[in-house]
Figure: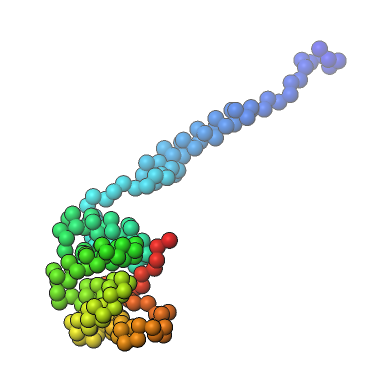
Amino acid sequence: MNNTGCAPTRAPHRPSALLVSAIVALATVAACDSGTGLNKDNGPYAPGVNLKQDAVDGVEVGNRLMTAGEYELATQAYARAALEHGLTPEIMVGMGTANLGLGRLGQSEDMLRRAVAAAPDWPEAWNNLGVVLMERGKTAEAEQIFRKAYALDNGESDSIRDNLRLALAKTENPDNTVGQNQEFKLVQRGGSDYLIRETP
């Protein structure tokens, strides 16, 4: 007892750090249950696959990957499309062009020759075959292929016309270095064109 005759006073009780952590955890769980926090509907996990939505066509996926320079992924997309649609001329052109991007010139030429045999009136396919032949050093044949593509296209594609012009210049003067900095353009159905970038 102290001099006043009262019981000794105690220091006010402070909650421990463990108790505070437990209270915060319970509050978080309560928030999740009330719909204001993370739960199964708006949680951090990716949403499931919507099976009702139509899948993007494999040929379109392959074409987009080609434009992005992802040639290996493009060949895989075209292969999946071939399982669904069969080996159509459009898929053969896509696979042949992707193989060109990967430096597989023999496979590219074979696939593009099959494409033009299956669709002999398709100027884009002939154009892309001409590009592969130029890459393989078959300049004279490439010139004839570009002529055919240009005729089938009625001269409407600037890319095909430019490719023919470059091939003619190379045929007339193989030692001419004027066009060395210019590249041949590949063409997709619909008229869009792009250049093949060498894969690392």
